[in-house]
Image 1 (cartoon, rainbow, N blue to C red):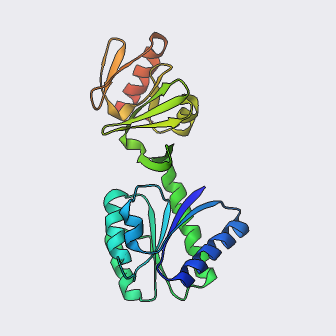
Image 2 (tube, one colour):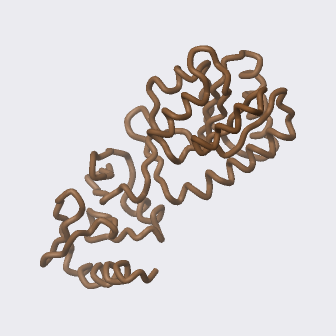
Image 3 (cartoon, rainbow, N blue to C red):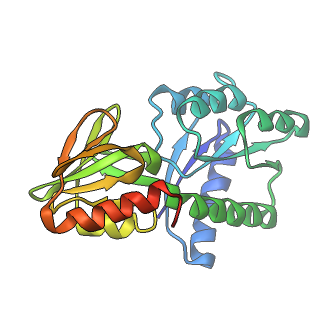
Length: 236
């Protein structure tokens, strides 16, 4: 499912965008989770990296789209930004916040369809480099490179980063499959370790960034060391 935010202060334009998204779902067999905001100030107030695509009007009364986009980019460098404006000169500033493109009002269906297709393609290329975690009542996106290890505790997973941990429902087997090819390796039945964060190996344990010491089971010691050596040598 693609998570899309609409940020638009004109009710007629908001309605057009939601109708276009519904039409796109029908015609392209896609599924969207859509959130609607009536101003840049509304989306930035409690922004967390949870959206894949943001369709953002530039000219809004309380907080314009460019100011909102700069705030969002300071938190989220992965979300695809598409500006919507009636003034092309404003859209040029989109390069400052790495906007993928802009659409001109009045917005025709064909232009919207093409741009959304391009945005979805970009999202799917990036998805391998990030994890979308359903934790509590919200969705959080993490860069794979920020994850130090994932720990299985009963029927939950603790996804550890250098700064904090996120508790989610899931199995280590499913997470291992999701991260296949991303240089993660099981050190034992409880830990899936990001080899990029292994700082050292001592007897039957490895130390990862942040100082946590993780057990390596005896049957996995040899393949773990082989994977670590391969990673360190740049062989994939």
